[in-house]
Image (cartoon, rainbow, N blue to C red; front, side):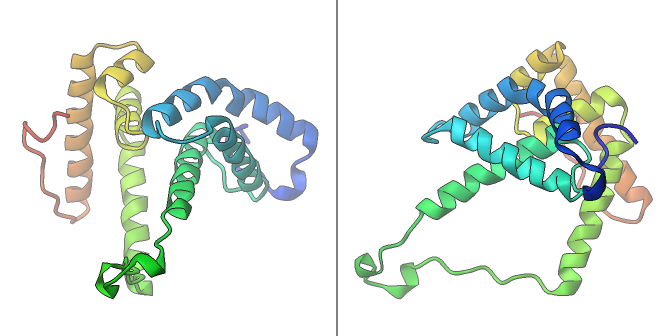
Length: 195
């Protein structure tokens, strides 16, 4: 079992967790902080957000839910920031003259729709895993973390032209993966593949 695979909660001890954290999580702290500052420039305290993300990550690891520490960390940090901003969006009832101005809660999907979405996500994850390494890295940084072409080029030490080519290649291969499994997708045009 590799360090990035989930481990059952009963085999985790503090020393293992500390070693795992030092090896798998801590090296990404500076890029996490940069990501959070660029994505959420109005967030009041990035340090609090980083610590909250670490707590959520360690709790999730204890339950065996963490396969890829870096991806889980960045996603957790983004979700923690979004949670913070959602909590701040409070509507003063006295200030609302028209009830139609209140935000409407979205209908939750039924079980069939939720299962369908889960299957689609699993298929998407499989299509991304099937990509060549460089293509997968570029696509993940762009779509999951929202990096710009310039940021991806700097992170992976490749040219922006290579980033664009790898993104286009990845999108085409994912579309082909879906079509081979009977799912029709609208293929991006040359213009849509650009930022």
